[in-house]
Length: 192
Image 1 (cartoon, helix red, strand yellow):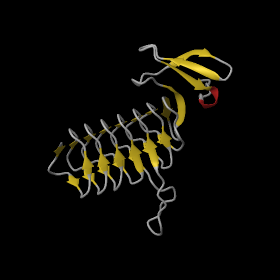
Image 2 (cartoon, rainbow, N blue to C red):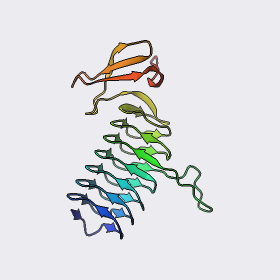
Image 3 (cartoon, one colour):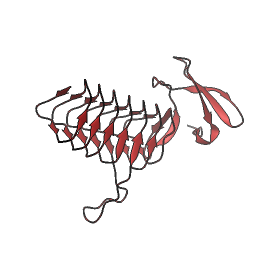
């Protein structure tokens, strides 16, 4: 384990083997970080946050209380998570939890609004604002974020291979991985 001398790690924090915490990061009490993680420069990990194994969090990401990040997640620079749907500087707060599932990738400068689940191996594009649950392998882009397609486990875009009455079969041309998706969550094709 490596903790840079400028990082602040509060009491009762669990940190797994081979995890590196870089310059000016702040890890609050009772947080749990798995093994072989990278916590970049200026990252803020709030009290009680749970981070799995082999997670890479790039510089200046804010991960607030109520967020759980599973194994093998990538979070790009300056991404942020919220944890209160009706924030005010006064009065009581209502903590709303967020879950990022295994293998998901969250692009730079994206915002994840609290109360959502980001599915396994989903990909959130840079700058997207996620306001709804994201299904596994979905590619979400825009403000607000919308499903624009699907990706394989390696993150490559998939194309439609075959359409059925209630499902669509997607295929990655680079690795031949296939994914069967219900038509109800497939994005409508837009005319450009």
